[in-house]
Amino acid sequence: MRLDGRVALITGGGSGIGAATARAFTREGARVVIADIDEAAGKAVADEIAASGATIDFRHADASDPTALEELVAFAVDTHGGLDVLHNNHVSFESGRIGDLTLDGFRRSLDVGLTSYWYAIKLALVPMLAAGRGSIVNTASVSGLAGDFGLGAYNVLKAGVVNLSRVTGIEYARKGVRCNAVCPGPIATPPIDRLHDAAPRIWDDIRDAIPMGRYGRAEEIANVVLFLASDESSFITGSHIVADGGLWAHSGMPPIGGLGPDF
Ligand SMILES: NC(=O)c1ccc[n+]([C@@H]2O[C@H](COP(=O)([O-])OP(=O)(O)OC[C@H]3O[C@@H](n4cnc5c(N)ncnc54)[C@H](O)[C@@H]3O)[C@@H](O)[C@H]2O)c1
Figure 1 (cartoon, protein in one colour):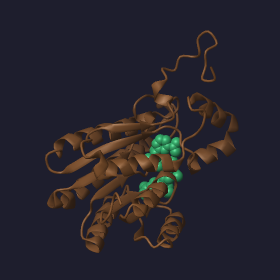
Figure 2 (cartoon, rainbow, N blue to C red):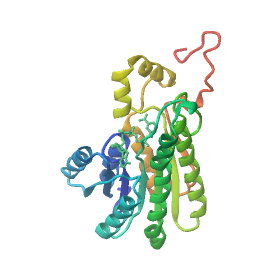
Figure 3 (cartoon, protein in one colour):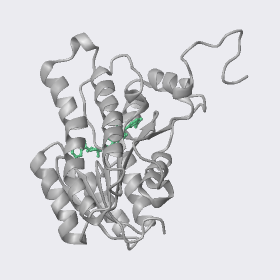
């Protein structure tokens, strides 16, 4: 098993990509702690996984609260004797054009989606450096590599996550701790399901912009996180992997001469 005996902490583990990653990690032998601000969702995921015989704990926590992060890392170390994998994954942010964002909303977006990733890394580095091994995987986004209309705060925080992963990767490369990011494209998780219900036309447009012509599945991102968390990616650090059905590879130019994705 690819994570046999490893201890992993996943933030935002109560839904979508985090929950799929918790399933993948436990399937591969890890003991997992998931944290989520949504108590019912996190508990349901943990109960479902525990029913398969895996070792998983749910902690009800706001990962943007430094004290909560300190307690989470301490819980993992005290309960399981160490911390081998950190998967920073939670997010919330303000939407709107750059000129319409609020000062509080912008600050809060960066606090939740970027500063807390850094602080969790800072805390996780202590047991990882003591053990001389560790893998940190941050959920960024293709939205951290380019801009989206109306998602400015998200674009900025995810770009920060990409570069946070780079600098962490290089600074600890000789200490046995790796750090990488995964950059998903549009994935069919609850936020995208809500978009489908609220604005089906936009949901269709996004799907059609993806060269593969479909949304990704949370499991398809969890597989990338699993790879980056495991020793199979032992020579990869400070890097990011795009998993987006080809979206990021497209320049954005409309089809020329009638040639489109169905050609
Ligand atoms: N779904 C996509 O299309 C997509 C694309 C690119 C990147 N991502 C990224 O993937 C990650 C997971 O997104 P998802 O689509 O699985 O969303 P999701 O809403 O299904 O899951 C996110 C989870 O994070 C939890 N959460 C939010 N704020 C929290 C906090 N402060 N502390 C603890 N938990 C908190 C939520 O309660 C939720 O359970 C995010 O970082 C998101 O930006 C998603």
